[in-house]
Image 1 (spheres, rainbow, N blue to C red):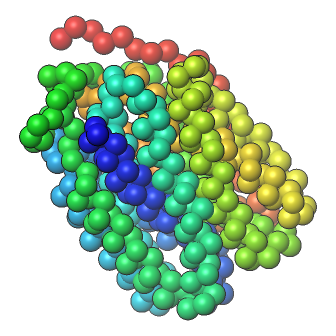
Image 2 (tube, helix red, strand yellow):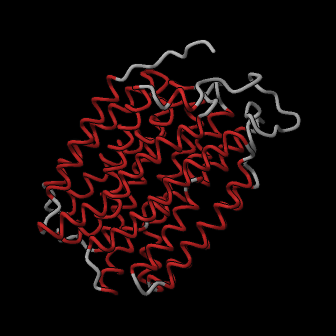
Length: 398
């Protein structure tokens, strides 16, 4: 059996933890608000700190993964992020929560840039490359579907402090176990594997310095920013918005998890669609669909409308995830893929990092999420237009 499929399985497990770290915080939102009496702006600032740490880590780990064995990178991730999440169980002030979530973010960046770049190197110019990438990023959706309701169960059964502790331990175990399986690809610039048969002598594509100044890279980064603006807003504020609209806390948490569940369909469908229309058109369709679904959310009045939003938004969100990294591989090759994924993701995460904070500020100021959701919808539609029209750059010889 081609060892790359074992790497796919382990990378899927790593991506699974993203569903925990990104989707679960919205479940902690109301308990923290009730425990300490913090405003929604204040609670959101802690998640902003997490995303800033994640952005820094994504660039650093992506650069390291382009050059070295991903195993020690992921082991450090397991220790640092697992510790940061667990320490959140001991917070008594917002500053402590910000520090510990920043630590968790600094450890978590590798859970995106390392598995997505490593798998694409293993399958570069191989059959079923789109399927391999789709399976890996499906891990995020599966993680969201599992961990959002699971965290809610832990909070209700054991309290939010013990829930943080348990999730930190789970994070560590999953990443540490997956790191034992993941190996660098036969074509990577770093240490090679004995007995591997590379498809090419060296990784192909653009250097980081040349790629990041192209209009195409800047356009893809803008599209990522639009997607992360929506993600940062909804992952934190969908649950309190739904509760404010009359939905029960359990149903709201389940809806958050179902976004991840329905995204699985989109992620797997992306492999089929990318072979027929290409990653670029898949990405454009995903952004337009997300924008339309947020418009639906503006007029939500009942629980069935919430679940209608969850189905359509989750599917389109799932299409977006693999298509954005697939476009980077198509446009720029694998030579600096990890770093390009990290840089574009980090810039987008900075937008996503402040999205929950400003959404909370808008709510505290106006008493409504309407303006915030309209802003998200406009950016998603603009991102879809950019994704549809961006041109692939040509790499000059030398």
